[in-house]
Length: 353
Image 1: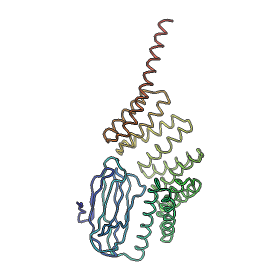
Image 2 (image 1 turned 90 degrees about the horizontal axis):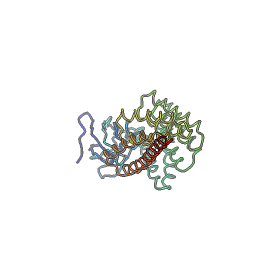
Image 3 (image 1 turned 135 degrees about the vertical axis):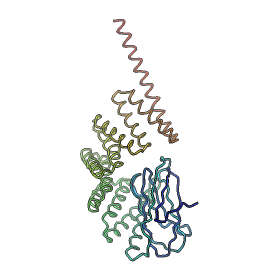
């Protein structure tokens, strides 16, 4: 059953990962539709299907759970089109979305060129995702991204150039071409700056830090990760701040042996995730904190973080993560028992001396 868009072109709802909602759009052949879906705690993918249920376009940009997915297409037939909004992360917690139909009108020539570029870009993104299990798909993704990049350059859209360069960089990283990926990410940063898109800029800088870490260039990786953090903070992109702290700076400081800085990065990330209500990421970050506290010998603090993480995974019904945390808790409790035994032994020895 299809949900309804109100008379001003707005629909809203809640979705968990793997769920979906359908909307119906009446479009004439050659009519442009431009819409956006604001993500409020849920990462969504958006599909538009024609009256015969053929896929026109699917958008699932790496925007996370707190940005906007944008779709632009030109109808190829007249009739009822189906718009599908689905939770893109299976098993992810529920969040809100807001659908806005921004514009419908007869398409002009530039609209058609832009819609064609969007379609090629969406195909590249889908091939990149398929590449996790199919190496051949990654090679085809490279071709599609390059085609989209050329189209965006012709259209004079530096922001979408940045998106294509970002995608190309991610594909080359998956193919093991780290130096090529590094160059592409640097170009993506420049395009996002030109377009005035701080989220894209921060995302590319953060990924560049990750690449440099893989290349063993830890100092420069740290610099890029810190730049990403500054960009996200300046633009008040809270989920980006947490991603830079938890996904990049924390691991980098751990590698450098700077445990206190790593702990501080993870604690700051945890605070942000708690503010925005990303409960699965809260549990993930608590797991990282537990590892560091164990290294510091603070077994009880580590156990507290693991207990809190376990509670979250139980709430979400994630049995795999529950099993992993329970295993870690078992190891921690064995360690705690050994510490308690050592303390008792020390006390006993003092009595005899």
